[in-house]
Every structure is written in structure tokens, then in C-alpha cells.
Image (cartoon, rainbow, N blue to C red):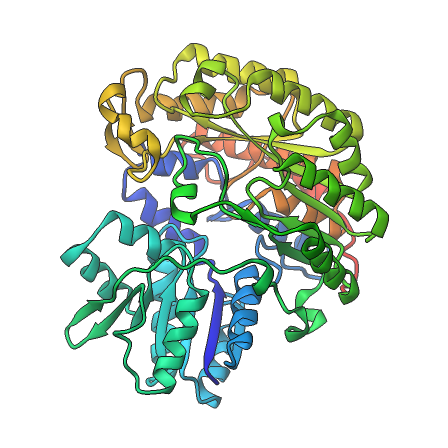
Length: 537
């Protein structure tokens, strides 16, 4: 077998908490994490971890496992399809933390040339190292290839000896460095099957003796229409009810807090015919009930988006879907079409309720756009999640108050506020002297706020907002709402559960010595998790 793909690894959460604590319990990183878990029976549990515990205690005759990545990881389907078109064979393990025995069997029983480790959602090295060590323990000959956003981002921030030290620490043999990597991975495997010379393959770092050789960089841009997922390569039971797909790459906007467009390159998107082809494939699978479009700007351009909506209505696919939505690139009529086309939820990157802050962020939307969109979504019954940033340069007590008033007035079903992350690859970094930015990552200060103040502000927001429900981070995302509904939990039950979970978090923060959930809150949580999980097809 040419390549064994390894999907997501959710490392031991308790260990992760202890690692972040080492940064200091007053650090921005820990404060950001602390709003995402409760202590229960001596362990830190995230929202879906606790849901699993309580649901199984209430219904012990039918134990279940609820997890944020309980679907076929999209990087597996994209990479697998690309390798197949390149004349290469592949196999995969979707979730490392759930399928270690299956991975061990494949490593032991098959002649594996390469193992490719993807790093889409990782923010630390530990999940990668755990996979590498497992592979080494069960297969001494397979070449380990590591690529994806974590590697690409690290290569942008460090270079020379520091980069080599990091690559050596991760433990891989070959690293794909670049914003895309499908073509590079294919070329690596073809080279290893031939003369083994990797020097002519661009965008690589690979072990050469006791050091690493770096090949020349080359822009890789794989055409979306020519590289769509071939779902026939995957069994229907693996695809199941939930599919994540994309119809576009990159983002046409340049928000000053975000480095994604710089990393991802030019904004490109599929034509209507290709979107229809993708949805037709999903419909024919027969098991798909929920589609998540991961395009950063699904409703841009507006004309194309309306055409997609009308096509979906005409085809009557039957599945429900959710997506990102740009509030200044839509209107009430479009939102009505979205509902008719099966939309059940939108992710709104609101970031701030202050027009002054939105200008500083180089956002094209304004407060009125968000309020208009939120009213329309509420009217048609589409669930809205508002994502906020607190502490961006220029933030003050007054701008935070404007954000709070927007949430209370607009009443999105769910919201979350995140601490601004001072990232040197984002556009705002070019103005760090103007704003007096000191420090980086989650520990920073600037002319109008520091990270400690921002953390306190977020904690106040967490407990004070009345008209919207905080959505936990770390192991729970917006798509978890739709996942839980397909698993038998009603939306009112989900809301009750999240209110209870957040109340448990809040009481443990207010009482630092508390290690259990108070009886009244726990009783409410137990009531909310009494639901019947439908049999999976």
C-alpha cells in the first residue's frame, strides 16, 4: 500500500489541561481554556465528554459515545481521492484516538510505504508526536510524512536551527511545507516508489543524516473542480449522516486579525454545475442528512449563492445544511431562500458590535448589517452563532459594551467570545508600533487593553449575557449542535444542557476549590440528557 492516511487525534484532555496550566492559571491560554470544561468525578470534562458520561448513566442499557469529530474527516476524503487519481493506493484510519487497534493491524499486516499524518486542527505538537510514536512502535520501515496547517504555520514563524529542532522533535521523516499539499504528497510517494530522491520535490523538509534538507518552495494550487472527492472510494457506512464539504478556497477579504488569506492564496470557487455535481453525489449515498459547508464565504459572490440556493430548492435534496455567512453580502430574501433550501444554521463572524472596532479590523460589515441579519434569521428559524473577539487593538470598555448590547439586542441562539490572539503573520502586526503591541499569542498588551483585562472582560461576558447561550470551545463547535440533533437530542434539550454546563463552569470558576457540580445544576443536566439515540443506518 502506497499511503496510509491518519486523520484526527484527540489527545487526553486531562493531560492537555495540565500542560496549559504550566503556562500559569492566570495566563491567557488557560483562561481561554477554563471556560470549556467542568470538574466531574475528579476529571476535567468538556461539554460532549460530560454529555457522554451523564447520558450513559441515565440510559446504561444503550451506552453511547458523543464526540465532536464523529464523522469521516474531510482531509481523508480529499487526500484519498487525490492519491487515487494520481495512480496511488491508499488506506486510512479516521480517528487515531478511537482506532488505535485498527491502525496497529494495518501497520503490522500491510506493506506500508508511507504514513501521512494530517494536522488540520492542531495547536500543539503533542497529538502529532503521539501518532508518530505509535507508528514507530508497530512499523519500522514506513516513512512518516507530516503536513497541513500546523507544519505550514510553524515554518512561517521559525526557520533555520529552530525549525530543524522542531521537525526533529515531531519525529517525522518528511514534512510537506505549504498552504496546500495534495500534489506534493503524491510526488513524494512517486519519488519513494522510484529512485527515492526527494531533492527534486518542492515544498519539503526531509531527514538527511543528522539534519534536514529543505527543497525549493513552489506555489501549489490544486484546482477544486478537477479534485473533487470521489465518494465511491469510501463505504457508505463510513460516510454516514454527516459530510463536510467545500465549494471554495481561501477568502476574498483581508480582515486585519486573520492570516488565513495570506496562507491560503487567491480566492477561487466552484461553478454552479460542479456544486450540483457534489451535492448529487452526496444525495446518492443515501445516508447523508447533514452537510457542513466549510467555505469561509459561502454566500460570496451573492449572485452565485442565490443560484446555488435555487438549485438546491429545485433538486429537493432533503438534507439539512449549515455554513458561514457574511452579513453584508445578503438580504432578507436570500435568507428566506436559505431556509427553503434546507439551511438550519449559520456561523457569523461578527467579532465586534462596535463600528469603530470593525473598521480597525478591516471588516466590511457594520453593526446594522449584523442586527438586520440576526433579525431575519430569527424570523425564519435559522439558528445563528455569533463569534466574537475581545481585546483586538483599539478595544476599550466602551467598545466591549457595544458588543454586549449587539448580542442582547440581536439575540443569536449562540455566541462565544475569544481572546484576541496576537499573531505575527496577521496584517495588524504591521501596525504594532502604532498600537503599542507588546508580547504575542495569548499574552499581550497594547495602548488600550492587555490580555489580563480582556480575559476578565470575557469572563464577565460569559456570566452576564442573557439573550444568547455561550457555545463551549475545545471539543464542541457549532456543528456539534446539528450532530446532537441527528443523534436524537432536541434543540431545546441542547440549549438546556449548555445552560447547565455553563452554569457548572461558572460556579467552579467563582469557587476555585470546587471540584464537583452542585446538586441542583447536576439534576438539570441529567434531565436534559434523557433522549433516545436513533439507530444508525
